[in-house]
Picture 1 (cartoon, rainbow, N blue to C red):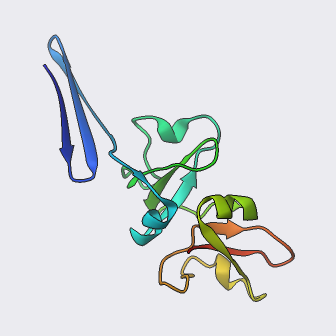
Picture 2: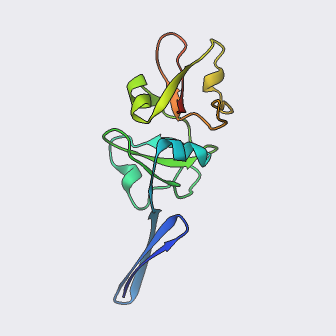
Length: 139
């Protein structure tokens, strides 16, 4: 018997083969980078090996990601802000995410874990540009 069930934001796929049964949980939806930030999450970029696309991928705290995020070539997942480090982005990647560059005033505030954008959401990532860099905030 095969079954597919949508429970909250997690898609549960059950496969029964003979006497054995396997349950796989994976993100049920694709999120925008802004929606990830509004959930209190941050992007974890795929390192280029497809690992964030595997059904068994877990955030650094062992939790299932909030969802996948279409980003660049490799993509990303949205993990809890508390358990994931913000990715380093180029200004171009920030623009692809629909973000806006916020320059650091010179004291490193945009790189602190508790930094929040003007709308109260966490930044989408650290942006490396000029001397101080900055943050990528949702528009």
